[in-house]
Each structure stands twice: as structure tokens, then as C-alpha cells.
Image 1: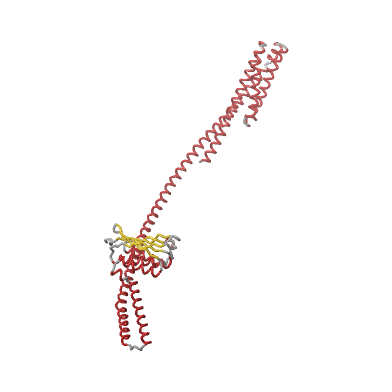
Image 2 (image 1 turned 120 degrees about the horizontal axis):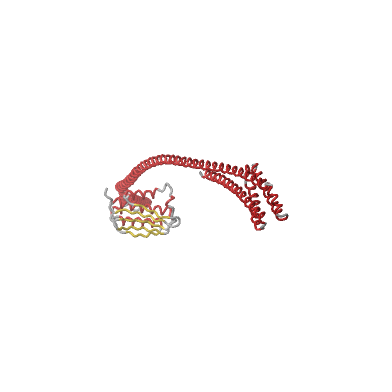
Length: 427
């Protein structure tokens, strides 16, 4: 439409310009007749009276005639410039002007009689009538060209209007088709979005269900592990403990029955007694690792104090504790104990700290336990897949309805914080 508008505008302006030029040509031709008539009137006034004041209008009219003739020669269109009538009009006009100039010269130099004789020949009248005849033909030709240009202008204007109407209708049709296509695309898009949302919802349900199953499975496995540890601890305490104790009593009775001079045999029995004592101590350590007796018999705070003290002695790393007594059931107390135990194990393996702090407190029914070290730290967002210790901590707290937060960065140490309610949430 822009191209059509520009081309139509240029064409209409060209035709309008040509029509305006033809109108100016027609007006110039009419003006030439008026100027020639004025010049003839001024010439007759001078011939009759001899008053030179009549020569001024004559000269002015002759100058305008010369100027308009030059203008007409330059701007007349080619069909008009090549017209015989225009050439004849120029010729008759020049003859008429020559006749009038000759009469004025005769009046000026030879008197009125000489000028009157020239006038009486009727040559000027014939030149004037021939000029008017040819001027009328030229005007008619110019009017015909103007009419043709007007017809062409009207035709172009009608064609432009029809073209614009066609373009507008085509644009409306294209817009309607576009709206229809947009509606269909939008409908398909909404349908695809609904299908995508339904599929996503289905996948999210599956993820939630499987996550819940995995969480339940992890909780079950941890409970099973703890139960198995408790069973092994009881069997070690009851069966192996009884065997080691009986063996130690037997060694003691044998030593009492030895004669005074049984030197090497006494040494062997003493060594055997030491080995039995080491076995009993190892049994006690294994039992404590499997199921801390302090947690069962004394409570969470003494168990944590015993754990941190033994870990500090074994690792030679300073541990600061701030343990507030809390009321937790057996499963939640065991989860807190295992979290601290796993955190200390990881610190000893990887952190290389100089100091560790363990804190346990409660506020508004929420228990918070934290283990902080000043070691090398790590990036929690870029953990290896095999970090089962942290995963185990997370599952233990999830099973208790708690939350684990790991705050660490390379070179900035690590803070592991677990929070859980003192009482289980009602189901």
C-alpha cells in the first residue's frame, strides 16, 4: 500500500502539473491576444493624435508580448509546439507588430498622411484577423489537451481509489485470516499447555509418591539398621561378654593354682589375661558404637558429652560444647546423636580443623543442634554423589519431620544445623 500510494501520488502530481502547465499556456495565449489588442489601441491613439504618451503603453505591451512569446515557446508541450496553428500565430503576430512599428515610424518621421496611407492598405487588419483565427485554433488545441489531462487525472484518481479500496479489502481479509489463524494457533497452544500441565502434574505426583516411598524406605532402612545394631549390641553384651568374662575367671583360677616356681606359665597366663581385658574393652567399644549405652541409660546430653570427649581425645582436636537439656523421645534423641556422630566423623576425615563447636538448645518447642568447624570447608552445591553421610543426616531428620541446613564455603569452615520438634507431629 505504501508503494501504491507513492506511485499514485507521483503520477497524479505529474498529471496535475501537466494540466496546470497547459492551463498556464492557455492563459498565456489569451494574454498575448490582449497585449496585441492593447498595443494596436495605443498605436492608433498615437497615429491619430501624435501624442507620444500613447507610445508607453505600446512599448509595454510589445515587451510583454516578447516575454510571453519566449515563455510560451519554452513551456508549451510538444504536440502544441509542433502545431502549425501555433507557428502561424507567431508569424501573424510578428507581422502585426512589424506593421504597427512601421506605421509609428512613418507617423514620427513622415507625418500622419504617410502613416494613414499604410493603415488604409488594411494589411494590419488582415494580420490581426489571421492572428485571432490562429490563436483561437491554438486555444482550442490547448483546451483539448487540458480536457484530456483532466480525463487522465480523473481516471488515475478513480484507479487509485479503487486500488486503495482493493488493498484495504485485501488487508481486512488478511487480517481476518490472521485472526482466524491466531485463534487456531492459540487454541492449539492452550491445548498443548493443558496437556503439558497435566503431564507435569502427573509427573510431579509420581515424583512426590516415589519420593515419599524412598523416604519411607530410607526411614525403614535406618530403623532396621538401628534395630540390627541394638540386637548385635545385646548379643555381644550377653553372649560374647559372658564368654570373655568366663574365660577371664578361668584364667584367674588357673593363676591361683600355679605353683610358685611356674615362671613362664605364669607369664603366659598374665599375657592371656591382658588379651582378654583388651577383648572386653574392644567389645565394650563396639557395643558403644552400635548402641551407645549412655544414650539409653543417662540421656542425650551425657551421651553427647561422652561422644565429643572421646572424639576429641582420639583426634586431638579441641571441642567446645554448649549442651542444653532437652526432652526427646528415643528415636529423636538417637537421630540427634547420630547427626553429631556423623558430623564429627566427616570433620575428622576431610575438614582438617583446629577447633570444633557442638551446640544443643531448644526454644518454642524446637530443638536445634549444630556442629561448627573452622576447617577447609566445601561447596554444598557441588557435592559428589557418594556423600552418603550428609544424605543419611538428611534422611534421619526428614524421618523425624526435621530439617538439615549446611552452610559452608571453601576456606570458610562448615556449619551443620539440624532442627526438629520436641514432639512428633500428629498424623
